[in-house]
Image 1 (cartoon, rainbow, N blue to C red):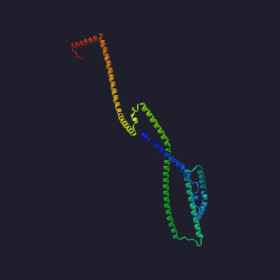
Image 2 (cartoon, rainbow, N blue to C red):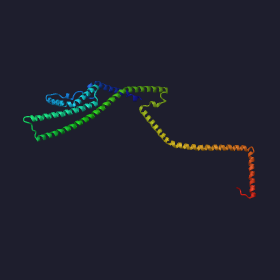
Image 3 (cartoon, one colour):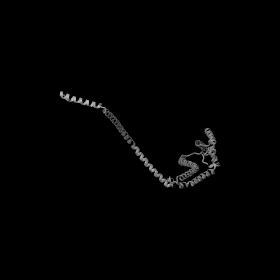
Image 4 (spheres, rainbow, N blue to C red):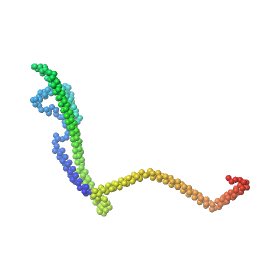
Amino acid sequence: MSSAASPAKPDAQRAADVLRALRDLQSASTPEEAYTILKLSEPITSAIPSNKAGDDTNTRAAAAANRTSDVSTTSVDSSGNNNNNENNSGPTPASLEADLAHYRELFAKLRFSYVEQVTKEKFIRAIVGDPPLIVAPHEIAELEAGNAAAKAELKALKVEVAGMAEALGRRGRELAGRYEEVRAGAARLRELPPRIEELERSVQELRARQKESDEAGGGGAAAPGMNLPLGKTRELVEARRRELGAVERELETLGAQVPRKRKEMERLRAEVAALENRRANSAAAAREAKRRKENAQGGVEDELEARGRWYRASEAVLRQVLDLQPA
């Protein structure tokens, strides 16, 4: 017992150190470093740097956005309301999914409007230019070839991005699972120190009780198995378990013999009942014979017996005289 209880304090100290380190990490982390759901609180276009080269593109995108404002006013208003609600109640996975779908739809509309506007501008410039721009068939073929190559490259990039997104999703799920494991481990670590202290108190109480019982029983001579070391205690427990297993197997064997023994007992009971009936009949016959014997001592039986012999002799004489055959 003493050798097994000695590592309790180092284990408790180590658990306390790990728990303290986790608390220090959590307290040292800033609110920006906390594990929270990302929130789309700002427009995506705010992250694009404005420069001179991109002014024309931004102007065209703004014009295209103005052209599609009538179509997307309702969706933008609903998205604004959703963003306001999210700012008040906090983001959720469902709201983030809705925002992502909204932005995808909006970008698709903006791209279509932008392509339409640029195509119109090129067409008008080609018509009103001096000299007018005339496109030859071989130029169209070259543009189609370049367009096909660009589409193939774009498709490859889309496949690569999809793979990266899937890998990021797997990594995110893995990290989320590990984070949950860390949180569960931290919760268990917080529960361990009081449990260890409680177990130590229980061990001390058991040792005190054992000491008192040893002193009352003459130095532990009454229960020598209580003072064995851990290894011998385990061996003793294994031996007791083997004995218990043997007893259980014997009980199973005897339990299988119970129905046969019960039938045999019922048969013996029937035989004993028959013998009891015979004994009762024999006792009754003996009592009857004793009664007759007692009555014979009074002379009544002797007279009847003599009369019977006389009747038999008379019958024999008459049969001889009359030549009758005996019945």
